[in-house]
Length: 87
Image 1: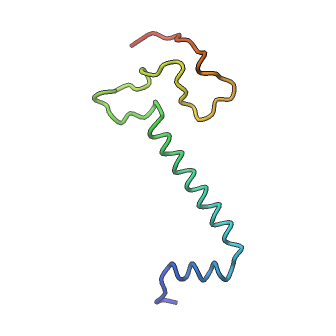
Image 2: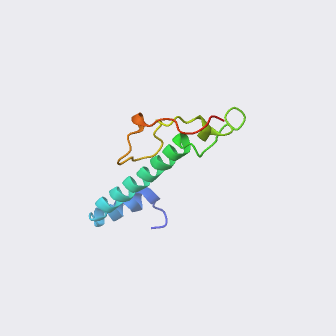
Image 3: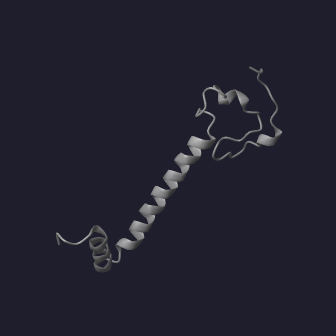
């Protein structure tokens, strides 16, 4: 058992216990979904500032009809009007 690689041991365990296949699939799906959501937050959120020289306050450049929330249940962003001053 000491000379076998990690992949060989993993394959042997899967072959011995096939009930682990759905669990491994759902864990992989959850980890992938979490990674994609974190990537979306890092790239599209107005709270994250990657370029401080050219855009120090990115939240001020948002128009009222920019949807930055992941899920908007009852708000139609296309019909909103500007109700704040320009900075």
